[in-house]
Image 1 (tube, helix red, strand yellow):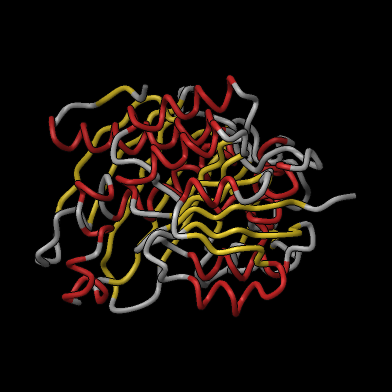
Image 2 (image 1 turned 180 degrees about the vertical axis):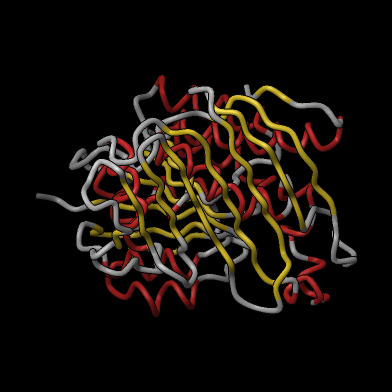
Length: 343
């Protein structure tokens, strides 16, 4: 079966571009890659990483899209610049994998989701944590009723404050809300918001809480967020999302149900463990699958295969849009001091 032709549309500041190049180089379903990068900054890395898979390198996005009939366009660039590029890729009949957040307000992403649906194209935000084996196992445990009816959840994703002290970071697009849409919550917290909805099969429909800069650095976007969440199944949860550590990550997803609980600790600790009163004895059980790969390769592979109609997409345009709407509802709640409906 013919492989996929992938067109990468990027520019200065394209996040995780090196990871995406590595992923395409080892994904056997990828046959050829065209890079479109007006800055030219990625050419050397692209040639070294992709080798013979690199068909051409263009300094113009339109020329890159015209260079081959691509089944998948991978868009990674400054969030404020991304929506028109995604639009052009969809108009070229490409499925799209878009590095998050790909917009600075949900209103810029919503017409892209509608266009993708109209053209029967996948629009997939790069929420790579969905591909973790532990996440898939946790989702299956909940779906199969092992912990019973979901009652509530608690989430935190905490990274290092150290990076915020760099003058280079202060100038980067992801430290400026006007260019990035927000700070820690839209950059890292968005992953955990997506995971809890993916794992439980329930949408967040209302939020309340706070955002701010607690570390004192000269940033233009929050380094801290604490939010309360209401889900469409009537349950509640909380998320803490912030830059607090000297290095590394602390992360945690816990779900309680009528017949037990489960907990993920993706960065250290026990990857996944759970307890169910439906089994006797109700001992704590541990995940025994393969260790989670800290890599974008599983996501890229899944998106490439979806573009070839070999499997469903790892997430839909509607799911991508909803988690973005959730983040921006959090920002409105913090600004107004009032809870906000998502939508």
